[in-house]
Image (cartoon, rainbow, N blue to C red; front, side, top):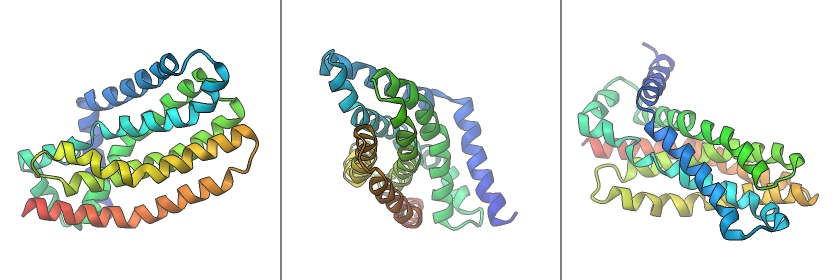
Amino acid sequence: MNTGSLFAAIVARDLRLALRHGADTLGSVLFFILAAALFPLALGPSPELLRRMAPGVIWVCALLAALLPLDRLFGSELEDGSLDQLLLLGLPPSLVALAKMVAHWLTTGLPLLVAAIPMAMMLGLPGAALPILMAGLIPGTLVLSLVGGMAASIVLGARRGGVLLPLLVLPLVTPALIFGAAAVDSARTGLAFAPDLELLLAFLLGALPLCPLAGGAGLRAAAE
């Protein structure tokens, strides 16, 4: 099998496992919905306040929901020995890590995108700002999967890795959260939102080559 076929096979394998054991995907989406739905209770009944806070609420809830399945992204393969088999397929470890990151986005990031639209409408975000929200969440959730997968591979096999994981991920993805929420807020208030989206895309372009390389190094170290 060539490199592309092996890469697609790893992604398809993870998708099959996610469909068979859908607890992670369902848990992430339910957490996102419940967390976003509880914010109005904390912020109060003011519609203007909810509209102003909606971009940040959606982005923070998406970030926290994407973190939930990360500690099992590589952990199950390490426990049952299939990680060694994946690394022996002939793919570079960086591509193995990238395939797992893509599968994470398809099973977690994509459902969060779908759930974000009704939650944003519930919080009173204007309809004109919804396309900007989605335009930011698509690269934003990709960044979450890339950075999260990299961090998951780095703490793989470490004691209390589940505790270390959020400490690694949260500071790294905070700029993406700021740019994404700022773009939606600018669109809501009639200001220029393109610079924030461009910064978010630049973040994604930087993470795309670097995160799989670091993730591959983490997988190789954990397998040794």
